[in-house]
Image (tube, rainbow, N blue to C red; front, side, top):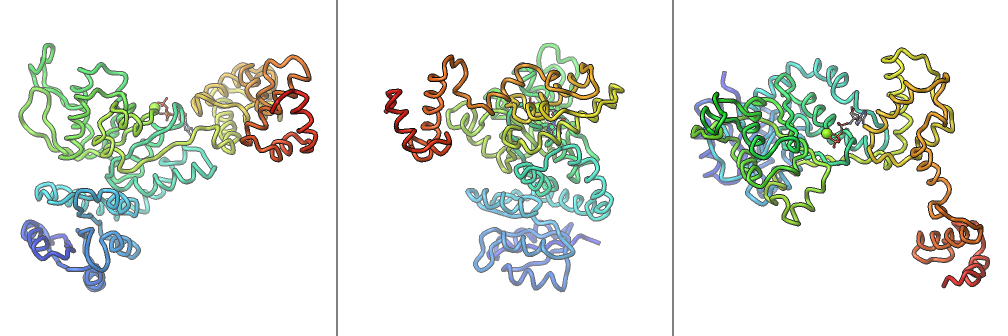
Length: 449
Ligand SMILES: Nc1ncnc2c1ncn2[C@@H]1O[C@H](COP(=O)(O)OP(=O)(O)OP(=O)(O)O)[C@@H](O)[C@H]1O
Ligand SMILES: [Mg+2]
């Protein structure tokens, strides 16, 4: 039995053109509006829906949302004119499988549709099983109960099943690679390869042949033909780490693969089609780089279909105790140590530290402390000096560093309090715990005006 596909478009020509192209392999149904599509679906459930975005009455986005709110859920692919990519992204966040820009390349449409239906089949048969698995391996190892991390989890859950390109941004050690893995594990591609390329680690020339492969004799030393990572990740996920570091020539090629889903090996002429989902990561501000000309803007927009920004640890201090305990347990087990935990003052210093290296730094530090401590608890003395100091300087006001006299200390505190409140004296006085009049007097006394 042919899979059922519903085509929704207000333009008769488009509708019928698509129908003609797909009729051979699919059982085609047509609707000219969102309303009539919904009505038709009540009587005839379909496997896939191809819908135009802009239509009078109900737009494609609303249609997709309403379709996916009911059971059974067909896979939805949105067709959109150039310039409407943002709405398409919205659709993907709402559960659509993919979007294609008009005019639609019919060969590609067939490929997308085929994949989409395979995805759905997999999703149907494995839904329950996978749900359990997901909970186990997907995000379980990403720790975070803070609001910003919960938002990250929501986005991961929403976009993982689609094939949308995801750009993960965040400082070093915030868990970008972990998230990339989760996106793969929670997707229907889970059984297929997850391939990572660390773009900064490879010299420019090597990077290209790593990504796209090469034919025999393509360059000196190419004694054998070799598949690139894009090919190796076919059906799976390709993770490009430190994407901000790739050279301009490779950026051009990458853009083309993203747009056409095909490429040639170096030294080759044959086009290779791939179904590879791309996840990219960077600890740089890629948008800024694109604005400054350090990164192709068109590539940035292609990569930035969905963005996940990981908050630095110091912006989610609520999670620090959780992470500390987690790694504490892990390293106690690994090192066969029976420790009781952290003393309150040690915990306090660790919570208030800035963590420039984020979770990686925290993890390494916990390991070190677990191994090195001599007592049965981790105490403030086991916490390295720089961590202690940084924590301490956050609790006692920062401006005191290097102050020698009481008077100097007072003066600096006042200056800082005023700076904190843009010169508002009432607020500054309140922060300092003195009256406005006292503040006034001290300002005069120190000659601060
Ligand atoms: N939310 C988290 N919960 C638990 N462990 C985490 C979390 N985030 C990161 N980690 C751990 O911290 C370490 C660093 O994470 P990861 O390699 O994913 O960071 P990154 O953002 O890719 O860093 P870089 O930019 O330096 O490559 C890993 O050991 C990872 O398992
Ligand atoms: Mg990384």
